[in-house]
Length: 375
Image (cartoon, helix red, strand yellow):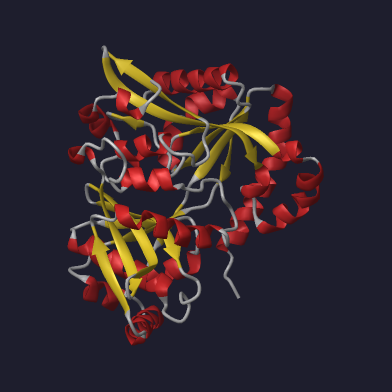
């Protein structure tokens, strides 16, 4: 299949993770209509007894810049090469799973070894057909990667730990109960930051379900965040955000992903937001935008997350996940780190050996730098 929409929506909803909003069909449809990195998309469909049994989304990127996906130290080392020989730091890569979220094979149940071998074999065949040398099963949690184990091992894949997700369990009656569940220092810090926000003149927080008119302002704030990011594998564009917000042409209102914008305004001007998606009993704070001119003095980052947590609790969510960045404040919120891995391979035997030698140290160093406490 070439498009997410090629799979009937009821079938998609049955196969996709029931509590992961990043796996809504509309999210994949918005990805395909935007320019967020991949140059092509495909979906491998496994049938059992003639019925859809499992689906693996694929995203192909031609000319991925390696200096944008490693840590700051590695980027500095690569800078002279990137300036003088830019083609040497570009690779073609096939991502398996979800380009924007946690990796899964969508399915009706546990993946049999035979299906795992079939999927991996078809992935490698597709990569060769499209001349996408490097193949990555991106951000898979251990049990999902283990299900693919028979196929990955036979094909010569190796694994490297990727940046963990951050997930907050929501087993609290309300937001006050959540605050009281925090240990003394994080609870004190949270109340101080909320007081700091309330002391700012003309600042207010709102939760919006209709925010298409704010997309241009959202993108300006999002760019401020991405300009400061250590890694920029995926950068959302206005088409993606507009499509997901319901602002795109020809949208079916019944098919829209359940979402809200936690928005902070200074007067009538948007100065910060956290875009929240919902599916089943799960929530995701998908992307954030900040006006750094006032973010620090208003405690804007923390207060946007507090508002998202309060919103998720009010909706009865059992957990909320946040992006793979800023681990210190998220630990302070009470988030747990969800370990994830890459499974990597190359269609060429020699380059597979080079990849196995060079890529793990660079990715592991980037991971250590991201998780290290900030002074």
